[in-house]
Length: 472
Ligand code: ADP
Image 1 (cartoon, rainbow, N blue to C red):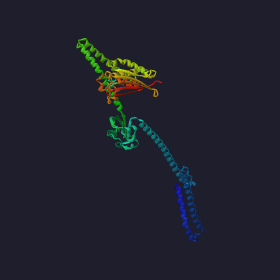
Image 2: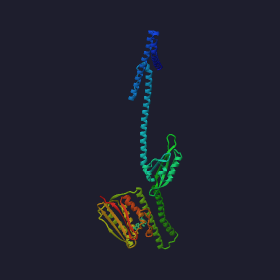
Image 3: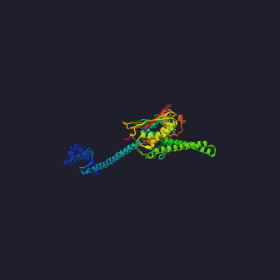
Image 4: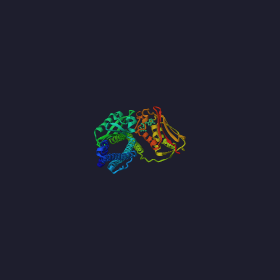
């Protein structure tokens, strides 16, 4: 390398010296003589030749480098003369090390591209999971901006899911408590901890729903600082209602069982204390005890039947049955009670060949409960009509039990099929448990997939009925 440079400098030097010597040669030719002149001319010509060769070599090298650059390919640069071999080697070294750097960078870029694709797929997967969750999910970043939410969250907090992304959480949610919970969780810096809070949220329709809110921090992988907060809101409204209903049921059952038991105990104590000295009073006491014991047994039967149907433990034996036959049997059983109150029974029943697929005992129990209520809540001298009606086009059979009794006030009508519901206005008319209609509804709707209905006018009478599918 150093030798090449030295040669170039020497050539240039000789050329300049040659050129400078020309006037001197002409002027001094005579003095120096012919041999000296020739020597000087040779020196200057050699210098010029040398310079021309060096330029040609350099041009050839530059051309090769330019070609390589134009082709965007790494090729070897060859030196024409050995003086330029070090320069060509240096250029080749530089080119191959650049080629290596470029190929490393290309490889890294490909790796990053794959990583990006995997990360995008993972994000889409996580989003799909979050969107499919029925619980409301909110994800915020370290600045309390909402980065992700699902439809359930949008419904719960009444915001537009498409426009909520990357907005401050206090602009999206109108619930101060939830905003404060998210902020507190982020500030707590707890990378591993979870917080579970019960909170009621007011919906767009004004109805309050109770949620179990689970809050956790999303930790940053690098510095372990919380990168945001995830809040999952599980709607517990239904669960709470069921828990309350269970509590109500237990307290209602205990209350209903205690009343006849207390009465039985009291009459037995009076008998033991000898408070009934004559046979007539004793018989009266025995009758009260018997009635209360029957009431207790009916109550227990009803509770057991309802809970067996509700829990799905009841054995159902469905066969082709004629509703008309079942209605006739129930009418026969109820006739003595109706006669005792001078209530007229009349029937308008369809031919027995119309059949329905039913559990005979259960359907009989439902019809008997409706008939017994009709007798109970109809004053003396009233009338009860039982009716069956077939709609062949719709393949339905309908039963109606109408009475001219006390009727049910409109405010009570929607609740008469609820467990333990008794109409206050009619409570003095007859004793009861408030379980009879609930059992009928279960038998018709849960067991037979039919439809139950009631129409009533206070003071005029009621019609209870149900509709079942006709057997093919
Ligand atoms: P209960 O044992 O009290 O009769 P039910 O569940 O059979 O319980 O009925 C619930 C309530 O519906 C009754 O307390 C009664 O007030 C009302 N009810 C039921 N059937 C009739 C009817 N035919 N006429 C008027 N009220 C009725």
